[in-house]
Amino acid sequence: MTVGFFSPLPPAKSGVADYAADLLPLLPARVNESGDVNLYHVGNNQLHREIYARALREPGVVVLHDAVLHHFFLGSLGEGEYVDEFVYNYGEWARELGRELWRGRSGAATDPRYFRYGMLRRLVERSRAVIVHNVEAARRVGEKARVIPHYFKAPVLPEGWEVERWRAARGVRPSTTLFAVMGYLRESKRVMAVVRTFRKLRAERGDVALVLAGEIGSTDLARALDWEGVMRVGHMTEREFWLVGSAVDVVVNLRYPASGETSGIGLRMMGIGKVVLTSDGEGLEVGVGVGEEEMLGETMRECAEHPGRVREYGLAVRERVRRKHDLGWVAEQYLAVLREG
Image (tube, rainbow, N blue to C red):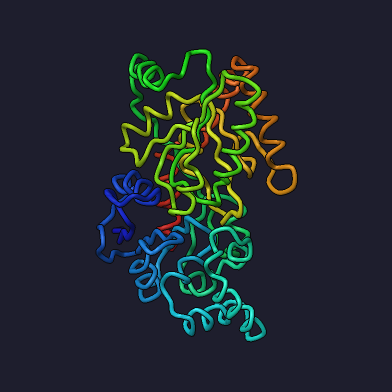
């Protein structure tokens, strides 16, 4: 069996590209060439435009990295095509809602309606099977879903002296609890809520710090985050990612609205023993909505007050992640689905 493999790949600045690059050597794959069965990696952005079109023309097995494609269509279709696609997914009765969502698309990054309507029907109908990474995404996809957990690949971590030097260069003492938001920084990662909560906590105690590590998704958000007292790191190479990840104590990885995805960054950080605060129960859960910032503040305060417990919890989660998300085992699951498809 040969596998036609279609995905963004590095140097594309994409978590999907990194994921695909790690999976690729473990499959009998031909990149960008059709095989006995084709494997299409599809996400909710324009990097996947040609891949989506080919998946419709030459049906195969789709890896759906986001169980929402709404923003993909907002960026790739004109108004008439978008409304027709919305009607295809949800019926003629929804035509006016489609027009309303098109008119309000400037707020699509934070409006829950754009995440509630995933617009998956056409791709799911055409595909032989759809691989997803969690049960919530499987629920959205339906009977063609095949759940394969996101993998963890153990990295080569930096030496301890490198980590200590990185912290010291930024004035972070050994006794300071360093929090981080990592990856592509956009509104749905609740970055503003994290920064507001941190500033309140910092006013209470001086032994906490916050770093925002990754590209910021919009100029408006960049201006809003230009606050004194918060460290910034831009786009990171793979080595820089693991250096920053090793240097921090707690990663805040909230998502709302969510699109049924599994966070590769969250899993990678848990896999090296970091406590990760999440909105979905994959890590140490912090609720969203009413009371979100109060709950987040209490959890961050507990982490700062009990660093020993933080380390113990992180090590326990590390063992679970490495046992349940082994890359070799994940590749075997892919091969089983591809043979079936």
